[in-house]
Image (cartoon, rainbow, N blue to C red; front, side):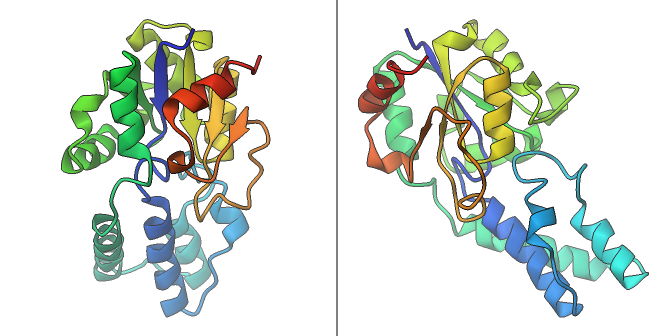
Length: 220
């Protein structure tokens, strides 16, 4: 019996990952350097602990990046993110979950300020009963801490909730928490290994929530 759905945020509800990557790629290209994608994907769905794009570029240049360069990068990131709406199928699934009486949560390796700020701007913050971010736990994804924290907040067990993710780190975190997981890759994660997920979709828009729950009912 599924009682709750827990969503990732970045790249799943809102496409923030492509703008973040593109904004850093532009900075690297302007300085005649390459941004190694294989290094970049180490932090997708997690934090910059494994790879910090600013520090990596500064090491390559042997000098710190000027504040105006960093500020312009943030401006470009923000400009691109603000041009994006909720990813296809997202709002419909939130509406369907409410109709079915399911609890909704968010488990994100980003900060509360980032996640809640965007959810409020998009007009869907109040849809979620519980939001847990990297501020709340000792370890971000791929560790299970975030999902465990959301499950405790929602008052449901891991077998009573499903996770919806876009990255290998996120899928790993959900599975380590004992949950079934739906993977929906985006432009950044499309070529990454998401085979640990129970189901992989191209978009939330390709299936109704009822149909998705029926498919998941057949998974262990």
